[in-house]
Image (cartoon, rainbow, N blue to C red):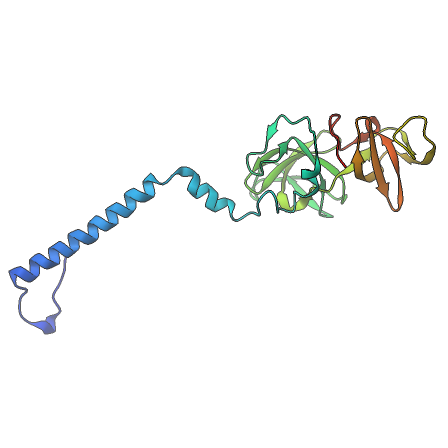
Length: 218
């Protein structure tokens, strides 16, 4: 950088003043280099952690909540973004959610979820996006704000009986047909307590989609 003396000051800089100016420039350049080296030496995770601050933490994100109530899951691992078990079941929070081919707004929309509360299985995480699988086995990417941790289950048997107790010998309180979506209140080894519109009871876990065979929670 060339340093110029203001014209109105007239006199040429003395040798001493020039030396001081050169030293000052050298010091400033040294500071710039030191700062640059410090930034290069910073751990790579520091930038990632700062970026993650844009999304609520796994404990406070809309997607979490009821998910953490699971006591045992047949998990293959943990999500790299949320730290939650993966795969895991969630439900559709929105009344309409675009399902994209990849994790980002630039990817094409393959279809649209339109049934609020439908159970979904999270099988991938990338930034603010979650890859989910629906009850028919199709998968795609949705924004994390479109799902929540509230557990629901879809009846996949032709019909399922709701019983007063988690036992095949218990009295039947209601009967549900294929396609009905229930809120899950608790699950034991072979049974889940479900509820919809004030009607509740215990349904055989084998008749439901939206809960893992090893999951036990209340």
